[in-house]
Length: 140
Image (cartoon, rainbow, N blue to C red; front, side):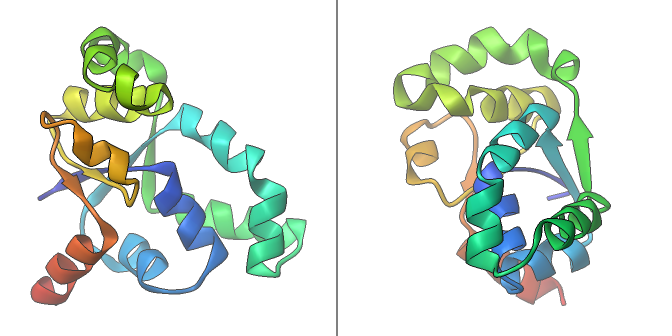
């Protein structure tokens, strides 16, 4: 596994708590990819993230920028041609996650997410954090 799409919940988890998710993102030798429009969701939950992480806005911004050094942001134009196929796969399950499926199709790689609804589709391989952690431990 050389490339992995990460879901918004993974980034939010890394922002809220210094733990395995943050460690994997910053230490794992893998290309992490995140659709840039997913940043809208992160900023939508910014207040909640700040509250749960017990940090201030400046610390939030610094931490997000630090995490983004390890994550390649992908513009929509890169995976737009896969949106229709992704829509067929994911729209009836969760239309908000179509962009992650489209991105995974474009890069032909799995998704890292703890959202169980991703597993309802059978086209893209989905790894939960526990599975990523097992891979991480086996490679170190």
